[in-house]
Image (tube, rainbow, N blue to C red; front, side, top):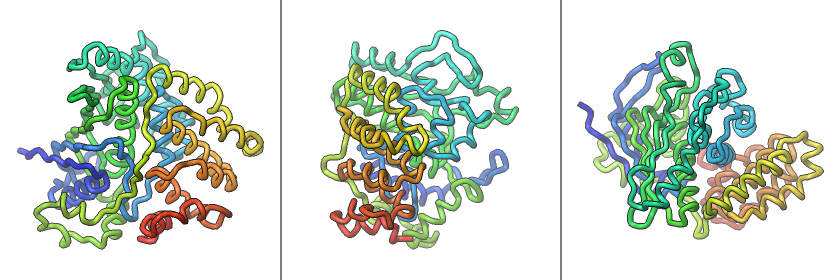
Length: 399
């Protein structure tokens, strides 16, 4: 029988490193679908401060533009795979037809009963609004649950036929306790590098922050319970394991006999959060106005050819930075920057980043952009005022 494993703390970077070490030492080797993994189960990861959703492990380059764009795509019910691929081309590997996903979280949360990939719609339900209404009417409710897994579309007929997109996360449970909004996410299978910390932390903590904003209450804790926390040994994120260990000059001998891996991990990681990190605060009406403005006006301006984008760039950037919700303003500014990056418009990459206030997200974005834009005029001035530790992190000095 497997003993339940719990990782809990305020630092997502320390949780990430601690879980990686525990998987290496205690994980059991398996080969589902012929791919070798090390697995821990069952596992619960508890984030005491889920508004901290950026991780800072050495040698780990995570695409923050994709994290922000995907979270926005989810909370507004997105299904278009091509749209999402503009922020991460490899995401199309999980689409069966290159146009839609079988199990996009946003569609299942905002329009349960619709599946664009199958051309199916039957009585769609906005589960997040349903949860909001339940929480609003009864702050002690235990009935605010939104489902992601769907046996109609994730069944054996799909999986055995080689379907590429099965929901890893099954449901989200919302509860108001001690005046704050907690969530608990049930998960069937979680890859540590690409799933747990590469995607889920940002996805679900963003949903949590959005719901808290709708309710007008603070964010509480976030728990994610998985029946298979794993790392790949010869595929997918296997190289990320090697890179992280190399960044901290760790080998199996370094931590195999460490009694308290949580303390050990916290002693190694550095995090770069700022006092006034942007947070999502929009109530439901404001959120819906912002969403309509983005999809009716901004999105079309971001997805035009290079020459047209450049002509409208100043006006577009001015519009997104005026968003009344600071976190969504940061999200849209990041999306503007990534589109400028994709189109080779380095000048607008820098101008967009200039509009971002100092934050953990800005540090992560600059690190991602550094290799391509380090010689662009004005790029290094974006962070020259920060501490030497942050500068070294942005410039990937640990590699």
